[in-house]
Image 1: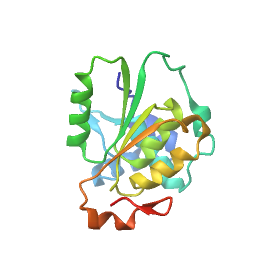
Image 2 (image 1 turned 60 degrees about the vertical axis):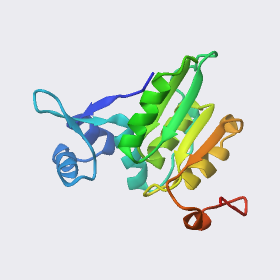
Image 3 (image 1 turned 30 degrees about the vertical axis):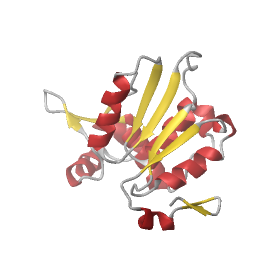
Length: 177
């Protein structure tokens, strides 16, 4: 199951506490991504807008784990994939669609969306791109590791970086390379 919740520009404006015209301008300039309905109306993914809200306020909500909306199914593997390349994100989605293991798949296009979804769904497995704008994969992992509810989550780091390029990413004092 993939969670996609769509917002109108009016709903997004209310969530961000700004004017609807500002949302439309941000979509036009690429600050926010949207899709259009057959009728020509813009629709924004709720996770994109929430991620933008976190970025705009420069803080991560302190109560992320308390945001869990629905109780997770005990027999389903919860997987969160955080990847800024939409083509790769779609590839992950297609590949996980072939799995016979019961699972819920949550997709995030940046670290902030990933953090929101992680707090809401407490995934068993997180696959994160290391090199993402705004919040890189290591920052995402560090925030997840701070959350008691996700201490047992397994994390896979994916990157297109060469070993020499990962030296700037350190965790627990060790290089990834």
